[in-house]
Length: 153
Image 1 (tube, rainbow, N blue to C red):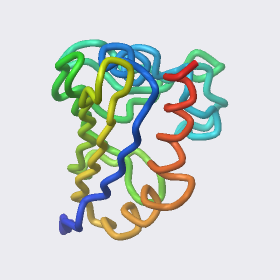
Image 2: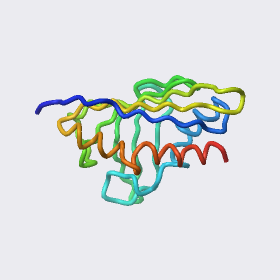
Image 3: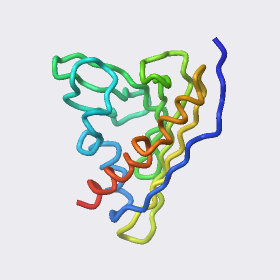
């Protein structure tokens, strides 16, 4: 297997929420905004979870009680930063050879706004296919818009 690195996908959005709230909605209330159709396992997704600590899991729970790991929490630094490993390939299958990371920074922009900067660093055998998928309208850009609505609610 050859691991290929491609240019990272970078997306940002300003949310109408204080920095601590913006972090909490993204990380602790991840399930509130993550779309149900964005799941990997065969069963329908019941819940999407980011465990609130470095070393924690990032995973989905299926309606049948099964669990499917997407990666690990590499850095948990509220309210500033979250880094997650990503073990999903360009076919959206679990693949332990994928060495990608998703870093999310929360930068205060006054008392009631936060700039959220996401960088998905990709290293995988099918790196370009993965990059194309997460950089598409249904990828991180669209997901951050869903998140921003939840953060502002």
